[in-house]
Length: 492
Image 1 (tube, rainbow, N blue to C red):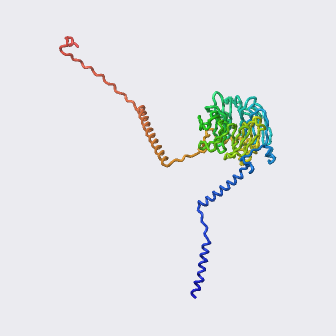
Image 2 (spheres, rainbow, N blue to C red):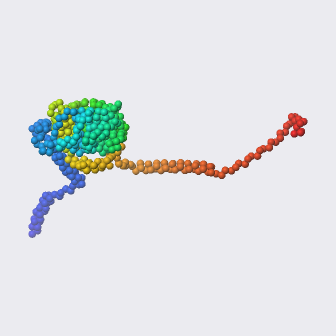
Image 3 (cartoon, rainbow, N blue to C red):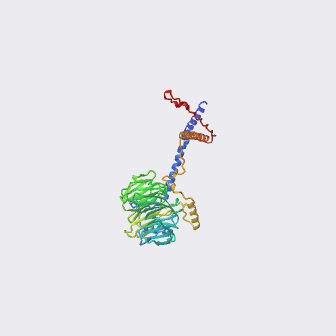
């Protein structure tokens, strides 16, 4: 009777042990592990979104080359009607041509070296106006809209409106060669070649000359850094200089190239500067450290005529009669040949804002070519409104004028403006004690000065006492000795 309960209990204990071995408690994750898991999820989602966003044209798997080399006729059958309407190629006689888009990318301006100026709505291919100025032109640049723009002509700088009216002829800007516009500061920067090369700033809101700086040598290109509004000049000597209106000398000077600069381009975030030279190199500079990134240097680019970055940091390199497109990692995406002949060389290239297109200026005309993935899809209508009407244009112009930033606030690091410098408590205490000592010394000097002033006033206003005249001393008769006396002395 005593064995049965022991036998019945034995298997139960084994079952419990088996159950304990199978059932394992879940591990409790620490806060660091949870954060790392969340970061991994975010990174994976970001990579997926980036892969989806990079809608570049990819070559077929059968092709060995890593980029697309195609013509417009090869792509046209696969495009929709709206995109087809934006593609055109103009054959013109007054080249070579340069191009410029407005801030919202709606209007395109073309400038021929022989004096041909034109404005058009390139999406609908509607010509707004065109005219000839009768002398050589070195470039044009829109202001905030297509209503006003500046043209660098042979003799001096001119400002026109959309009806081809010559509003201003600026004699203070003789022989302009490169121009650029700072929209947030209302400044027009001009490289002039007079007796000596100079960089001049014109405030278009007041019409005054904001600043002018002498240059060490002739310039070949000029661009602006969209991040901090610093003007970057490329010189004939191979030097690259950066300028601000409030500094008499160049803020930064770079000398990586050995020959004349042929092209400059800055990314939208202001981190990298791409520069090409006649020495055949394409170099990239980290503008945060002002150091050349030697790992990204490319050779064999001696025939480069133009560089330009898109809103999504695609780099367009115009060289010879082709335009090469590179991504952020400098992988060649595709090659375009806009000209009909090999003699139709590229003179300028510029990406259109908020559109997957690039405008190319050639010796014999202007072309627009689709570049998938180049434009940004994020549109800030308060800054650049692509659906702008006449009423909104007037309101935005007034608002921009009210929000104008002074020229003195242009610096290499715009984050320093409004920044509070934090100090140690010991330094603050020392400065406070020194201030107290200075105040005590000043007060002691003031008190001493007041005493001297009071003493002088007391002397001035004290009652004057008349001094008693001194009595005249009676002359005592002089008694002569007996030997010297005479008989007559008795009668005196």
